[in-house]
Image 1 (cartoon, one colour):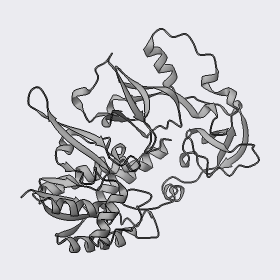
Image 2 (cartoon, rainbow, N blue to C red):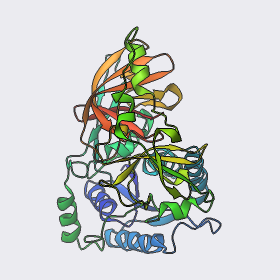
Image 3 (cartoon, one colour):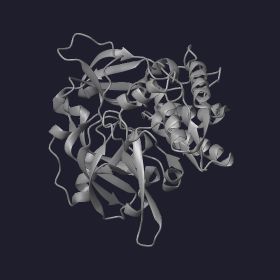
Image 4 (cartoon, rainbow, N blue to C red):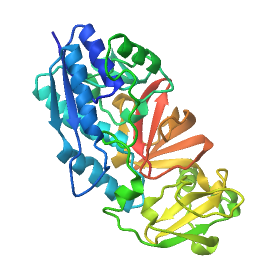
Length: 396
């Protein structure tokens, strides 16, 4: 009998994943990951992990499977929290959920499971995988979007490798959320009606500025409103020698000077803000709400524009450096000079957008057919062919 260790989070999705695996005849063990108890940095006054671990234990007892808790708080601080502080300090906006999956669930947790003799790990993600043999007989794994398009979580798994996929099961990938809740209710699982978790992976809700202020001290700076006619895309573009020249131009992040607009307020730190943000500016009196179109952490200035249609929010092209480029399907990785038509998204739940990948020395351009709002440094772009996620990278 094959052994599977399920990451029981105390939520309905992982509970049903464990139930389905046991029903399918696997030897199932539940493992709860505790990821935070650092008193030097307060994440939240609440302790959601205590309630979650208790719910996970009750589910394990109901299913008749072994259960234990593993403390990964040291790894979580080093790989997720410290990285988040570092990225925000640089003026980038990291995605902790993608990192959590890459660094914790499918690395540290996976290794623990394998050391315990597991054949697989399983999670309650809404995604699927399948496999096929290439011409040499080598097995390749495909990461596919979940059947429930409203809950598809393949984007969060965009950094997984072939080795990780080989050892992973996604039991609820063929189900919709209502179906999952119905299965939980039919089997009297305590998590059947439990609300989905919010906020940071494993930690729960946290007000990001409060969190960041513990390491990145408040520092007053200017909020500048930039009129729409100062946008890069409304200026006369130069003539381009070739496609690479054109892509380099349109992928370049627009830069602003204070003289490009007018000072309309003050903020407490540019590193607390991200492109596309509206809340937290506390500037009134404009016909349309102000949105952040750029942050300058070096000079501590936030540049804003009126309305979500402000041209300063939009770019056509983004760039991913080789060191932050990842292919799930390594057999499809482009060589310099190669291109590939794909569908891509730059944030979770964003509808897939038509784009073309262009591989050059040093990285890859993602050139969208339509302009994209709030392309944000530090976030992940993921690209697909049909319902298969092929690869991803950190936006530069």
